Image (cartoon, rainbow, N blue to C red; front, side, top):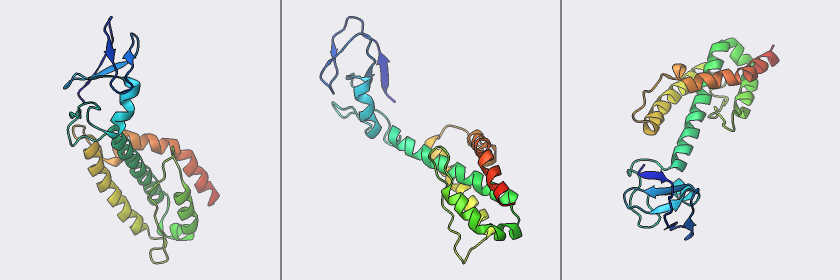
Length: 189
């Protein structure tokens, strides 16, 4: 992004958003292309929704670069995909077809009510047609792997992509939710 933070040294600069002077010691930001300056507290909310200078509308970031709000939404969607992947992988690992059929309703309720850091997994609708179908969960996990790879590349075009089972965020998430998974499994015994 084309923004620089700077400190004032006996300079007089007004923030063009609040129209108040930027005082020494206040965090100030300058858009490098047009040289307009703002209080950081004034500019940050603007940048959550826009990618232009509030004064002259010159582009601050490339057109295809998402705003911080868009990035936040995409990161939340990634976390949702990661959580769903962890839960579905766990089900595929812990349940054979017979055991899965025996506990379909409990698994369905558990997965659809599961929350981690205010993130819910993608809902898996166990209808009578696909009731207890491990192959449906495998297929959905395949979709999640593909969707995650695409979304990750949108968010981080220059970063290396890890396979989901090697992704550090997925591993961390798995470790954090393990006690809940273990407790649920104990209720089925």
